[in-house]
Image 1 (cartoon, rainbow, N blue to C red):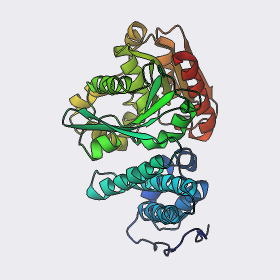
Image 2: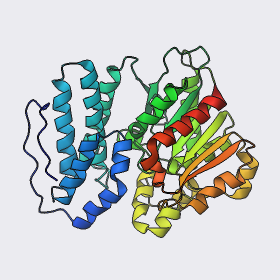
Image 3: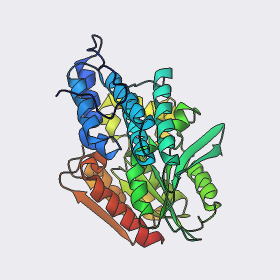
Image 4: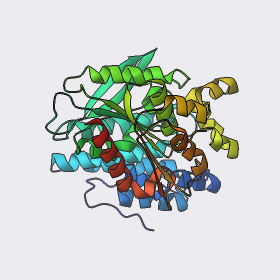
Length: 373
């Protein structure tokens, strides 16, 4: 594939050159972890996603290619003839920088800088919305838990809200489309990074431990005190976040509904099958000490679920999901004490249903709209 210059780009930069120090195996790993469906469903424009994979295949390197695409989108945004175009391309830039830093395994200065660029351009887009997306920073321990509040149009006084978050790769902005789907159905959405994820980890060095449910409670307290947010609170967790959401809903019954997308009752099943993924768990928890990790990632047993998880539950999963196996995901649905529960399975679904993102977002948003409003 030839990656061409864009006529919208006011000052095109040459493509980055072929790198001599990249490893084909690492590039293939990046492509598996960030397939086209995930890139596009996570906010990257389709031609950027295809270009990123093509440049990676050609030997440019994932990191250099993602940064180049992000910088091109920034130039287009800054020279756009309308706020609408500027907003769109700031968001495309944010996605390119976000997925570029996903190639950096360690939390080094390069990763932090790229992630900060992603957050900055998502914020630039948020301010250009017709109804601006609000940034909130909530004190937690020695740092802050930052997030983005997406309100529906014509909000009422007792509007419900859903807190959305990811998993090992906890980049909250990846779930922007899900937040928009909720807002279109009259439900406010809050995109957040939990301790150990995204900005909470890279900026504030906050890490996940077994007390993370208290962090979610603090977020819920902050949101419920905002003007117009006085309704019920739901949780929508993706990947490992699905496990975190189910556990939080079982421990804190203020959460009135929960969606588990691509989650598992046994989050350590992935590093057990593929030990290299243990590095992601160590980054999330900020430690290599196994007893600390085990406390944070303890399995949800059927007895625990049947005794504690009582709120309405929607579980979404792909049958061929190789990250979290369907048999381990199904435990959450089958054992939950919820009288209102449903497990939806896509026979060809990727992990987190990246290849069915519109259906996934519609199913989850409709679920929360009918349970919380």
